[in-house]
Amino acid sequence: MTDTAQSAATSYPANDPATRRTVPASSTPLDPQRIEALMAKEWERFTASTPGSAAHHARASEPLPLGVASSFQHWDPHPLAFKAAKGAWLTDVDDRQVLDLSMGFGAMLVGHLNPLVVEYVSKALETGTLFVTPSPTTTDIAERYQSRFHSSRQVRFANSGTEADMYAVKAARAFTGKRGIIKIEGGYHGGYDALSVSVKPEVAEAGPEDAPVPVVPFEVEAGIVHVVPYNDLERLEALLAEYKDEIAAVVMEPVLENIGIVLPDAGYLAGVREGM
Ligand SMILES: Cc1ncc(COP(=O)(O)O)c(C=O)c1O
Image (cartoon, rainbow, N blue to C red; front, side, top):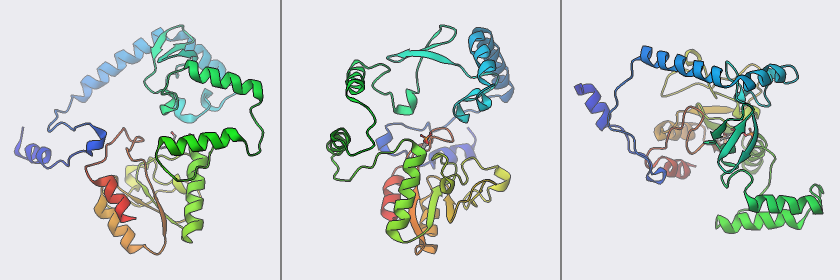
């Protein structure tokens, strides 16, 4: 290891202990050509073993943009299509059993077709599902949420992450009487305009690494949005100090998933909370 690499490794900040993971003190970069060769081999194997998904993708591309229900599900040469799931296993249209390491981004953590969930959903189908009125069912779930998370906070249910984040931003703006939002550069929060800023900005447009500029896509009417680098309390504090009279909320993924699961440094999340 060179002196520079050694000092970079030893000065790397510690992870938040709550994440129960550690970052290695040093790493050896892989040869990019070797990675390319391995990837080419894997894609060849992928294509050879998934003809059913390829055929499904050709069919799906007629009625659905990109052949998918949400753009992130698309990849080249074709995404896998699944027809069933049980427990931790998915069955694709080529009848392969595939271990589900995503579990609906967490929504299915108790397992696909968990018997208790099946029982309660079946009961609900017998008593009616959509009233669009107050219902003891809604209240029960809100009370369970409070007791489970030892919280007296009130609950408002939403249909998607986009919608929940949109209402959270609107509530913060209405409550504080301020319009500004701070978000983390590279953070993803769905399709609401204010949070569509600097989600995956082009590096050439993103400004300096330690003081990124908001990159607003053409179709987005964002309002007042500032972006800060993740794990950078100093920059956040500076922005809050400069714009304290206009910031309604800081919006962030506690673990930055959108750019590849980046963990918070020790003290970062507590620091953000204190700063607000
Ligand atoms: C952290 C985060 N917030 C919001 C969203 C948007 O959720 P939805 O796709 O349900 O609108 C996502 C979706 O992946 C997310 O990962």
